[in-house]
Image: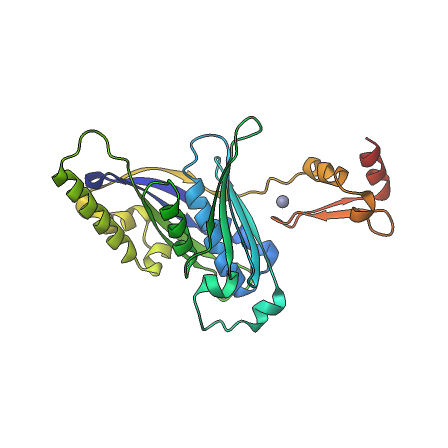
Length: 298
Ligand SMILES: [Zn+2]
C-alpha cells in the first residue's frame, strides 16, 4: 500500500510523517516514459508533495511546482486531502541527452536556477495560500529546507529518497520520505527545558540524517519497524495510516471548459477536430468537428 503515516516522538514534542510510494508513483510516471534522470527527480517531487500535502486537515488540494531554466524546466505535483496524487514534468530532451549523469548535484544539474512554489487550495470560497522559495540547494530536500527556514513554518527537517530503477518507464519505482517538525511550545518554559528541547531536536535531526536510502525504501522493513529503529529511545507513537493513490482530476467537462476559453482555430486541426491531452495523465479527449461546433455554440 502507498501511504502517509503520522507519528510523534513522545519525549521530544516532535511530530513527523512518513510517506512510502510504489504503485501510485509508478502510475504517475508510467504514461510519460521519462528519461531516467527526469523520472528520478519527478519521483522525488511527487513524494515531497505527498509528504507536505498529507498535513491537510480539510478538503482541499496541496500543490507543489518548480519552474527553472535548466533541462527540466517545469514540475507540477498535487495531492488532495483524500490522498489522490498526480504530477508531470516538462523537459528539454536534447539538453537531457547532453547531461553528464555522473557529475554534479541533481538540482543545479537538472533544474538550474528558478523557484519552488507551494499552494493550498480549499475550494472556490476560500483564499488560496501560496508560498514561494528560490531553488537553493543541491537536492530537492535541501530546497525544501531552504523554504522551511525562510517561511513561518514550524522548524522542520525532511529526508527524501526515490529509486526509479534502470527501467526508463518508471515500472518498479519506489520512493519514501520522513519529515519531522518541532511542535510549538506550550506553557511557561524554564531555561533547562528550552535547552533540553534544543538538544532533543538536534538529536532527532541527526538520527534522521543517519537514515540510509535502502532502509527508507526497503519493502522488507515496515514503516513501523523503521520508526522504532530510529526513535525507539525517545519513544515513538504511531498514528493511523492514510492511503495515497494515483488519480487525475481531469474530466471531459473541464476539457470542454478549456476549449471554450480558446479561439477555435487554435485547438482544432485542419478537419475541425480537436484532440486535447491531459498533461498529468496523458488521457486524450477527442471531439469531432460537429461536437466542437456544438460546444462553441452552447
Ligand atoms: Zn488527467
